[in-house]
Image (cartoon, rainbow, N blue to C red; front, side):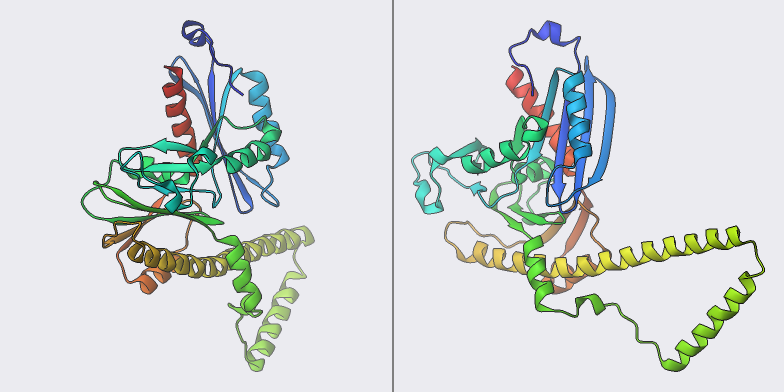
Length: 340
């Protein structure tokens, strides 16, 4: 954790370390930037496998090592909970209860015509969640993460911005005049429900091979093995291992594409329901959405993108997006703001 109230003059001679951490599905992403006297001395980005949304031990060791080595470390993460949202409050005396919100139970961040909020319970849960790395310094709303990315590109066209992760999506409807709507939704649990309803999902890409072709293929394989018997055994084993590795990579790629199709079907349903809410609820000044912009944080397949386009029948573009990059930049901004 950071040490505050330290002389700014003395601070120039010490490094500031900004760390962004994001756990998404089975992947934990980490970005670390070390700055000294306004010069970037280190810039590290790594990914780790994780289980049950827990911080991997390798990440704990990595971050603790920086915290031990450098006194001024700042860790930023993104809130992932239904206990957050966007409010369009133009009158300070407006009744928050119609949004189902008690301001005393939330932390709020004000913008010109809108606010983001995160409930205190969610903040406390994140403090506990990241306790193994001595807590976090900054917890950012996904809507702030999106807004920082898009704010300089906003124009008169009203768009739905979709921050797409493996396990969740965050939605923001905006143009250069206003923020109209925001929502955060889990995806992983919904995907599990879909898979349970369809026990044949694993057979999605199965290929039926006629018996005569099977016999022919088996004969070809036997011939190839016969040819290889005369070769050096080590060479044969190396070639076999190489083929098995390629086959495994292709299998994982195919499975990833299948998962992506199921994921985008769930995402499409969430978007449809959210737009129905946006257009029908009097709480929102609904405007016609002209385009979707996907902020792709994990590598969405072209098949999934085309599925969304076909289902929603609206112009859609995809932009690569790094959440940990944004968390580091937001942490730097917040650090400078609080340092004044």
